[in-house]
Amino acid sequence: MSVFKKKPLEHVVHQFDTLYECVKGQAERYGDKARYIYTENKEEKTVTFSDMLDRVNEVASALSVLGLSGKAITVTGDTHPYYFATYFGTVACGGVIIPLDKDISAEQFVGFNDMCDVECVVYTKSLKAKIDAVCDKLEKVRYFVIIGEDNPRPDDARFMSFDEFLSRGKEAREAGDRTAEENVSDLDRTCAIIFTSGTTGTAKGVMLSERNLVTAGLDSCDIMAVKKDDMFVSVLPAHHTYESTISHIALPNTGATEAINDSIKNTLRNFSKYKPTGLVLVPLYVETMHKKIWSEIEKKGKTKFVRRMIPIARRLPRPVRRRMFKDIIDAFGGRLDFIVCGGAPLRAELTQEFDAFGINICEGYGITECAPLISANPINWKKYHSAGLVVKHMQARIDKADEEDETGEIVVTGPAVMKGYYKNPEATAAVFTEDGWFRTGDIGYLDDDNFVFITGRKKNIILLSNGKNIFPEELEEYLSDSELVSEVVVVGRKRDDGETVITALIYPNKDAFVGKSAEEIEAALGEHIQNVNKKLPIFKHISALEVRETEFEKTTTRKIMRYKIK
Image (cartoon, rainbow, N blue to C red; front, side, top):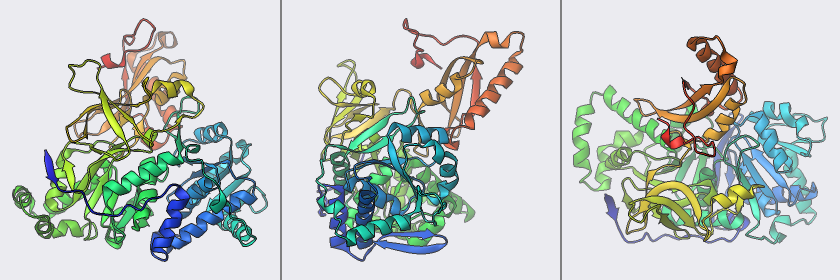
C-alpha cells in the first residue's frame, strides 16, 4: 500500500501569524523575484514579491480613505494578482473578504452581496457585463472596482478602475496612512465568508477566521516541502478555498513563482511555455493529462511497449524512470516533478502510472469548513488509495454508529476549523458534535500511521470529476418551483465511461397532467428542466430525467429516504 517512507523532509517553513505578515515576510525574503507571471491584454506582465506587498498596502489604504475599513468586500472574476491583493488588503484593514464564484447566476450574486452587506465589489473585466446588469440592484454597494480595464463608467462616481483605486491608496500612504501595518488583528474574527453553494435562501456561507487560513497555509507549507526555485502554473478558480490557500497563501510563502493560466484552451501550451516543476490540480486535469499521454503513445504505436515497461519502471530509481519516459515529461514542459491533487477522489491507478513515469502525485483531502486542509500525502511518504496524513495542526477521529463497524464518519478538530455558517446557527449546530468536533459527513477510517482513507462520500453531495461539489438541494429547490412537480430528488448517475450525470428524478403532479400521455409528461418536465438550467452555471446543468410512477418512500415526518433511492 505504501509507496515509500523516509525520514521527515528537512525544509524550512517560514512562520507567520497573519496574512499581512505572510506577504510582508515574503517581500523581505524574495524581494524582486517574480511572485506572479500573467497575461493581460495580450501582454505578459510580472508582479514581484515586493510589488505584491506594495499593492496590498495600497489596497488597505484605499479602503481606509474610502471609508471601507472593516467592511465586507466582494472579489470575483478570473485569477489575477490584484484579485489576491484585494483579498489580503481587505483582511489587513480589518475587513471581511467574500470571494464569489464568477459563474454563479446574477440572482445569486445579488443575494450573496445583500446577505453580507457588501459595500465594495472588485471584479475582473470578464465580469463587466454581469456587473453592469446587476449594479443598480446592489443598493448597499458604494463602489465597483474593475481590474484590467479603464473605468467603464467615468460619469458614475460608484465606478473606478483598479489603477484609480490603487492611486488613492498610494496618495494616502504618501500622506502617512499605514492602515495595513497598524491594524491590530483579532485572529479569531471572521475575515472571509466562502459560499459553498445553494440559492440565496439555502446557501451556506462558511465563516473563516485569519487563524483558520494561517493554520491551513502553514500546514500546506509543512507537508508539501516546496522550494523557492519551484515554478507552478495556476489553473484552478480563484474563489476555490483549495486554490486560494494552497496556491496563493502557501506557495508564495516558500518563494515559488506562479504563472497564471490565461485560459483553459491554453493550459498545455502554458505548461510548455512556463515549464512548471509542480501543479495544484483537481482530478479532471489529471485525467485530461493522462488521456493526452496515452493518446500520444498510441499515435507513435508504442502502446504495448509502454505497457510492458511500466511494471519494470516501478522497480527502478526515480531519476531513471524520468529518463525512460522523458517524452511524457517533456509534454508538460520537461520539469514537472509533482502534482498536488484534491477537490475530489482520484483513481489510484492514475497515481501509480504517474509514479511509474517519474511524476509524483500527492493526493490530499479537505473541506471549505477547514480552510480547507485536513490531510495530504507528503512528498516523501505516500499511500495509494489514501487521502493522506492528517496535517500537523489538525486532529481526526472516526465516529462509528456501531463499535463493530470498520468505518464511520470522519470528524475533525483544530485551529483550521471554521467559526460557523454565516447567519445560520441551526446549520452550524448540526455539523458539530457535542464535544465540538466538526462532522465532515464523509465516511472512512484512519490507519495506524494516521492516514485518512475515505470509503464513502457525503450523503447527498454529487462530486464531479472537475472537483465541483453539486448540492442537490439547490437544484431541487429550483425544480420544485413549478406546479408540474410534486416531488423531486437530484442524484448523480454514473455512466459507463465513469463520468457523473446530474439526473432529476421527478414524481409529477398528477393534477397538472390530467389526460396527458407519458410522452407529453416527459416532454413538459424536460422543458421545465431546460428553463431551470438557464438559471444555472453550465457545470450545474441537469442532463437527464427519470419520471417516477410512484411517490418516493418517506419517513413518518414526510422526509424522503434518499438512501432507498435506486
